[in-house]
Length: 345
Ligand code: HEC
Ligand code: HEC
Image (cartoon, rainbow, N blue to C red; front, top):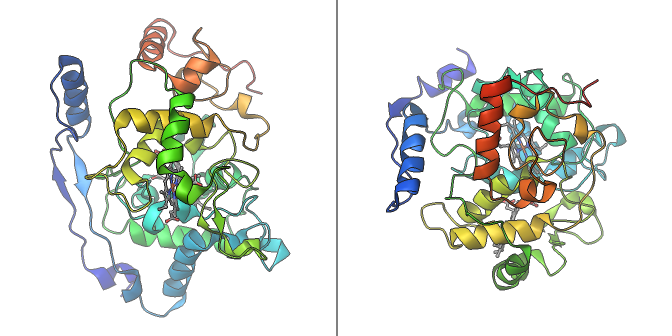
């Protein structure tokens, strides 16, 4: 019996999913309706018990994969014991963003990743395997270098992700995917107002310089009890968390740490502004991000770096408001279909 047999057939249900927030004004109601339509077939999931896996080669590999998610810097960080395994460029853990080892709803869950790849990547303009996607986070969120597909940490991560996705259909859309979808502001997010939110709500853990708290001051490979939010040991400017929509939703649904999306602590406007404050701070720069997205019409509206297909300023792409940009992109799509990135080699 293979490892899949250990769990029995996982129950995968589909349901119509309503909007996540109460609606009163017509614009928001329209947004909710669009959301409900997009969410019409969403898989509800339950997690297989990783600890029920037999103590065989696959079981050990998958457990090692979970350990890499939670204790990334110990295994593959810049100060990892084995120099050949030093792939990550910072001491973050995957699990600092993919909360509860990638199993938290709206905490950037990794539950469906294995079922979703291979998939087309608009960022690279080419098909991406699950190994490619992992390396997307290695080179951006972890500010590191890509891991070979046959490296043990890659194989372990792939095994862990495979267990998480057991029972899910290919291309699954899952309940709780991503970081959520709080209503957008019709103004630009405001870093100065966000600084006050940060001082009230975040500084107690993340520190006044956003530096976080190391688990062991003498040995960086122990990683962080509280991760840094900016500076040299943070994610780089090409990372998904460097996009305002992702960051604001993540913060709203998960921060202060322990927050659950059904009982958020931050008001949506506070989440937008504090995200703007965090993303206004310095962080490592990734070389060549101007070549991302060979078709500029597929570039997310909140990408903080150009070039852009539209004429909106870099500041508006970084801080919003996004609705006018989205409308311009939709017009350009109807007119031209695609806009090639001039930096694409
Ligand atoms: C700084 C935060 C952060 C860190 C650290 C991080 N990631 Fe990510 N990761 C993201 C974001 C943001 C996304 C994009 C989610 C989205 O597209 O909505 C993502 C997406 C992914 C995906 C694709 C998920 C899917 O279902 O499409 C995989 C796989 C992944 N990360 C693996 C990793 C691994 C492995 C590590 C550690 C080596 C890691 N990530 C570290 C933020 C992070
Ligand atoms: C109670 C302490 C605490 C508070 C308060 C808190 N955080 Fe966090 N934050 C954490 C911890 C711990 C993690 C990592 C979670 C994990 O590894 O499971 C984290 C992770 C994060 C991450 C993703 C990891 C990274 O390095 O980018 C972001 C972004 C973040 N917090 C932003 C905020 C913001 C903004 C606030 C204020 C609104 C806030 N946090 C308040 C403890 C806290």
